[in-house]
Amino acid sequence: MIEAEMIVALADGQRRGTHIVDGTPFAALDRASAYRVQSGVLASSGAELGMLKTAIQSDGVGVAAPIFRANVGRSGFRLPVSNVLGLEVEVGLVLGKDVGPETDIASAVDHYFTGIEIVGSRFVDRKAAGVNGQLADNMSGLGYVIGTEPRPLDDRIDGLTVTLEFAGTQIYSAAAVHGFGSVLASVAAYARAQQPGMPLRAGTIITTGSLCGLVLTSGAGHAVARLGDDLVEFDLV
Image (cartoon, rainbow, N blue to C red; front, side, top):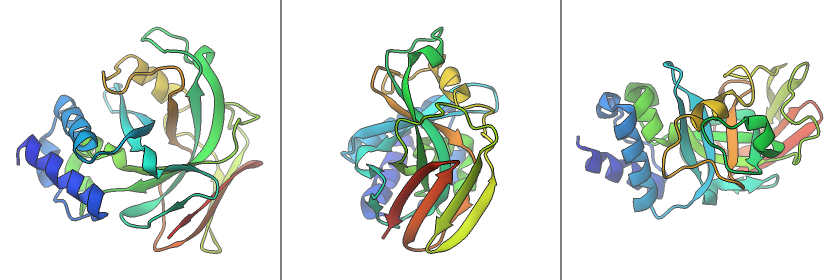
């Protein structure tokens, strides 16, 4: 499967709300080709970039993916359940100034927020796509809901508990632990490896990694997340 065919397949899955793409051919992608597919899907699907999701790959390089504007909302948001795998509670931020490779990230932040990343994929089996295949698929960042904003505790999470309720049932409760060690780690890593189509500019909204891993959900329902006193809620319909 060539890159153009990958773009068509993922863009079609985005438009139709389906997850029938075979991930196996995507496992051969390197990081550069994954970014080409990712940007091609954004362009061909007619979507707009709403915010960024940052992460750190195993070699220490920071990466980013778009979360489409139509799938980003505030507490009370409603999103179709198509392609949803589960939820992640996260702390994100809004940049107050442009960021370069040597910028002190904390000094560039305007404010922080608590949110829920809605995780979803267009692959039948996203693990079969490998790390860079998943990068091409927007790192499974299907949507996002922003709750408490600005966040009174800024980037602090120590001593806080994450809870998630879905369809009237508590499905997660544990201490908050950031997957990349700290809220700013993945942003700092990506600042040193920015892509031209996703620069870190003033006003950019970024989510920085899960505090609870991926919590699986099934079907439609009302979701409520808490991080200490922070609250986020929305509906999958």
